[in-house]
Each structure stands twice: as structure tokens, then as C-alpha cells.
Image (tube, rainbow, N blue to C red; front, side, top):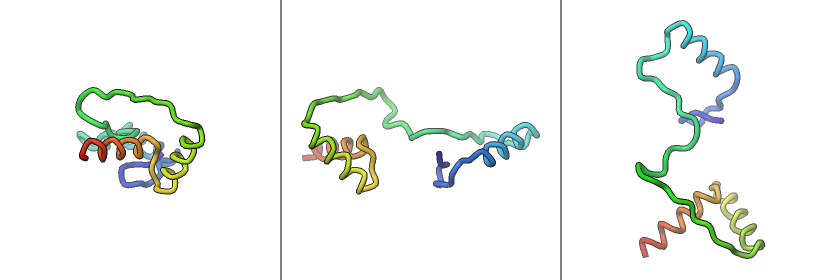
Length: 84
């Protein structure tokens, strides 16, 4: 797990944060959000479809080479399709 700046969040950092919170030194309004940001302010939907396993694997490998998750790559494709 990493923070917003990309630094790893390990047990030592969690302990440091917990100690600061227990001492009352946690900055007012300071929060930590785990996970990816929301995709939108509204409702999201899951799309699913079938393709040959070989294409699915090739898609996953290409997304990985580009440093993306499969979901990110699919969202990019949908955005490009809707812009066309």
C-alpha cells in the first residue's frame, strides 16, 4: 500500500501515525484515505462481456506493459470510443 505521494505505508509508519493520534497530535482535518479515488461523484456500473481467453490474456499483458490495470485500460478504451 502507498500514500498519495507514492511512499510505502508500512507497519512503522502506521505505528508512528497511531502514536501521533493517541498523543492528540493528529492535524485537524487530516485524514488518510486508502484505496483508489472514486471514479465519479455518481453511481458506477459494471460492464462485462466475453472474449476468447487468448485475447483476454493479451489485453492483460499489454495493460501491464503500459503500467495500467485492466480496468484502467478498459476505461481508456470506453473514453476513446465515446469521443469518436
